[in-house]
Image (cartoon, rainbow over all chains, first blue to last red):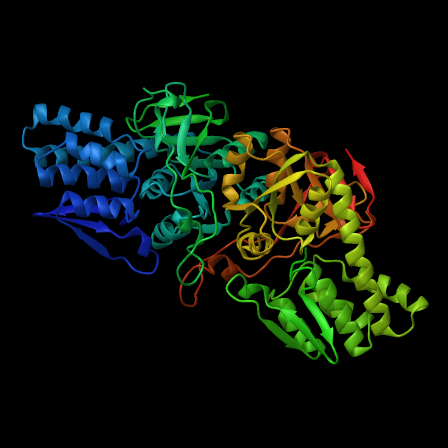
Amino acid sequence: MESSLCFPVRLEGQTIYVLDETRLPLEESYLEVKSLEDALEVLGQMKTRAFGQVLLFLYTCALTGEIEGIATAFKKVRPTFDFNSLAGVLKGATQKTPALSAAVASIVQGLDKKKKVRSQRLAEILPYDARILTICNVNGELIYLADALSEMGKTATFFVSETRPYLQGSRLTLWELQRAQLPVQVLCDNQAAVLMQQGLVNCIVTGSDRSTKRGDIINKIGTYALARLAHYFNIPFYVLTQFPLAIDIEDITIEERPPHEVFLWLEGNGPWPDALYPAFDITPAEFISGWIDISGEVACA
Amino acid sequence: MESSLCFPVRLEGQTIYVLDETRLPLEESYLEVKSLEDALEVLGQMKTRAFGQVLLFLYTCALTGEIEGIATAFKKVRPTFDFNSLAGVLKGATQKTPALSAAVASIVQGLDKKKKVRSQRLAEILPYDARILTICNVNGELIYLADALSEMGKTATFFVSETRPYLQGSRLTLWELQRAQLPVQVLCDNQAAVLMQQGLVNCIVTGSDRSTKRGDIINKIGTYALARLAHYFNIPFYVLTQFPLAIDIEDITIEERPPHEVFLWLEGNGPWPDALYPAFDITPAEFISGWIDISGEVACA
């Protein structure tokens, strides 16, 4: 099965179509991006994120014929994600496939294949009756995971933490799992501890925006609390990691998002009350049971 | 200083005026309750909660001249709160003051005085530079606390967890602390762990809907996770308890609220996706540093 979130950004001719994730689950609509300026705007407004920002970066490079400048510009808008490494991957690919758009296409195809392999590896580790708690969204990969589990005769039930303030869990993950007709329930982030306490979940699976040499991960705010609680309840915590563990924690800038995002639920416009909103948190390696790399490599604690 | 939330429900003549907490912080409006039926409706819709439901119960008794039947009816709508004990308190008061409305008035006055004493006791325990993390809402008592701290030459800064799904933290506590011009920031529930990790808070203060003989408390969902994390970070966790610790945990029914409340942020109407929403959780005594009883008694772990 596939989700619209597997490829939320597509290049057709000279236009990049970006799935407006902020409109989900109400409607599946696409924004048109025709320049670097357009791309930075949808990025800053978090119309797309995670794998979508990888695709947006790659297609913006294909569209403009540039790499370095695009990485610098993207990093200014979303400082936590490693656009420089991604630029390195793209430059590497152009050694073999000089045409930028062809190099991009081969990277995108390769990444999707790798995500399927990664889901396969994770499925091998999970229990036969997998009751999976997750947070935020990993772009269709939970659906690949459910497919892989099903092929092994394993069952999957999903519990999705809503992921305040941007509600990527409720907006995206719940939506894609429901469309794939998988058993899923959503919960408020502050209910996860009770689910664990009551034995309703037996594993936790999250993505990660970045990871370090020693296995710490940076992921959506709330991940750290889940990992800390799972450790206490002896529930294994598995992370899908994006890139080789080649950096230190000090190398990473944790992005702060504007306070008004915390007040999306308020009708009308500001002024918004004072709010704290670091967009990501750091989960130290000691709370992680297993890392499944995009290459399909598995490391267990 | 006083907050509108200190007395969110008032009796004037034959009408009970109920502050519609679901309209805060957008507007301060009052609903008129003239019968038990009206009272049960505003209770079920959570127009008022916590101390408001205590007041609503007492004034509904005064209005209808009945006690037992009112307690049974209230308990059906909000099963976690102990309306039966409250009925006992009211019956006890009528021994001294036979007129039901006079008995109610003296209980209400007494409770407010006790809350001030309780805030005083808690202020004595808190550090000089109190950086207080709280969740949900304790009906103006944080303002009494700030007053008491200030009289002792101590300072108070508040961090308010928004308290999903009903957002009592953002709607009520932030609103009343801002109106009292106290320093306050709101955060998403899943950010609390990072605040603790970074040393930004040095104590946690919450209310409790119920508490047991051994000191376990039942409070708004999310409290348990805060207590568990605070214990890990060695941050003292203080609880304002309502009633003597005279019950066991098995005696308490944890209320489940309807799933659509988790989706308040979605525009339009249902059908709502499947959601989990236990309204309360249980925090075991071992994670609590101190209990401050409504009578002003303090117990420390």
